Image (cartoon, rainbow over all chains, first blue to last red; front, side, top):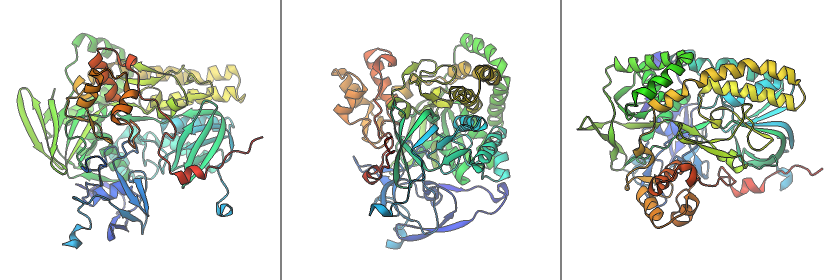
Length: 107
Length: 475
């Protein structure tokens, strides 16, 4: 869905760090929000709505819509757009339907 | 156990507390620090700059150039702000969530999982704006985001959609189209929902706007830039829908009687911006309906004073005027507070604030034109029955319309009937729509209908945070 800007448009190459998403190690750019990292990893679905279990992903990216709630370091319902990634962070996406991350290992 | 808790570094009393580190808040802080007022600033982000100057301190020079001159212009106030922080004249707390403010200037703020109760002589609300929710069929599908979200991802993470459609209306649409073009994004289409405005009112406002000619020039430049790119532009579009099963797949709409369906990875929606009023309302500041801007704004005087004597409101949260005007309103409000705290004389206040007030009036001159040209079409305010209005509780426009017909008295009663507005976003994504549906259904003005009461905590906090609240020692 989202990709890094062309290297010719940045001054220095982007630093990558390792975080864990649903127990899988993933490499993401440093100093970006968890929501940005998940979108960079092609993950559009962050959770299911509590009412109809329909898939949801981030809408506003600025802390207003509360659609990007995920579990970060054991704390549930954190706004992924408001928290920055750091090496070793543990993220759990509670969606069971179409999360692309972690699904490959089960196959 | 409690002895293990770190000592609160946040103090219990301050002269001035500023909420929000955008263009407005930073200008207040800089002005006050210059005159020796002890000020503290709380901001929810990890870096100063608000939405407009997001990541400007850290972004590489190439990306800053790509984003444009108006973005880079924020460097000046950010550098001053950083200098004052380094000298210890401004206490700045990023990642701090203000969840409570009352009319006695008691503030509840939560930071790193701990909550603090503090008091201030003066409070400045500079919480900026949010994008106006744009309820269309399928807008809750993953992959549909606000246009501002697309820009935030570029500014703060340097990531871009692989293929996208930009839909809606407003200056930001054309700015992002320009920035995306420079960044090499594959924009499949620009879907412009603005309707032609009557020529007579446009011409009158255009004449007034000539004093702020740089906005006209910039707008024209951005639109021509899109026009001469290879991106198809569809104008005066209706029947806009996001289509997809588990996530967004395509956008469908009607233009000149023809039906279109365009596939893309993401759909970015925009219908202008509105003030983020939760804190101001919770503190009891009076608000009023602003017809031309189609949103609620707080009642403030030319110094940014709200109806609550000790609370000032600056920047876009006091009415949408843009970043330059926000900085000027911040400076004016800061000078006024410096006067009230006896750091400058009345004569100095008049002299020092004169140019800011004059210059702000010039920047305001473009707004009536923008309000007319980008007036929100009624279908995005009062959407069809099947459209989800409250994303949190999944309440449709039809449900709100139904209870209104049955005699529901207003948005607050609608909460009790349908749970609309009672989810985690606390009505931020549905209040503007619910008010409009009821107003249209009852044939009354939105000002008559009113809106949700904002109640603390105005941001969700955990019970642990609440329990940890360090209260100020009673003297």
